Image (tube, rainbow, N blue to C red):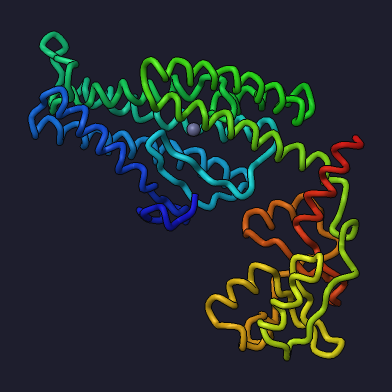
Length: 361
Ligand SMILES: [Zn+2]
């Protein structure tokens, strides 16, 4: 999730936690429903506090996944809170079935622990008189019980085997013990999609959030399956297999205006920038357009192009590069061979390469 749509909440354990702007819609929705039900101001406030408390539990749930992933060698960039729940963005995911099982289970386990703590609290302080308790609205009295129930609901809901929800991941990890990860993902994805359709249909009658969750599952399952497919196909290749050694060149003394005129005449997505025979950097189509926007066409290329650009080694695995390029939104990278410039790697070519290999598999 892009950060400009999110409000940063802090960085526990080095993981950026932020809340997406759509979360405010959830609060607005609760207020609307509460007003519609004729609740008083204090009761409405109570509902909002409850939702915030619930989302603290959701953050802890995501932190559970994240810390387990980090412990097992994964990498977590951030956690984003959406009205339908939390999302941890992992840039590296533990893939062994056992590790994936632990990472997936860690989230719901956190909610089990929270529920247990609330239960102990209720038992010790006996704040709850179940006979007199009302469940129509959230009050100071039933707050801990409602929060406990909500946490148990989170556990139960997450354990539904609808990949890529936690239960679906647990299911895939169990399948992967006996079959390839690709096949396990395909089965988990198919079952996930059945659940997604059930969610969407049920949601139309009962709860709009279920519809949104259903669509998230549909897209998420498809995306993750594609990713595994990429991994399966690309893992046997390195950058060297698709490096382009013929490319459009420009001298670093030329202007952006000159580059723009030439861009329409070439088939590449950018230029290799040189000074004489020396490699100086890459000017991608996007960099050029951004550069023209902010500096105008008189700027010299050398004032825009970084002298030490990101680059990849020719022996790097193609899948790893693919993931990095997607994540960093890089479409063009220089390829080096033992410190010497060798050619360019274009994300578009990488996609084509994948499509061809997939079609001829
Ligand atoms: Zn989870």
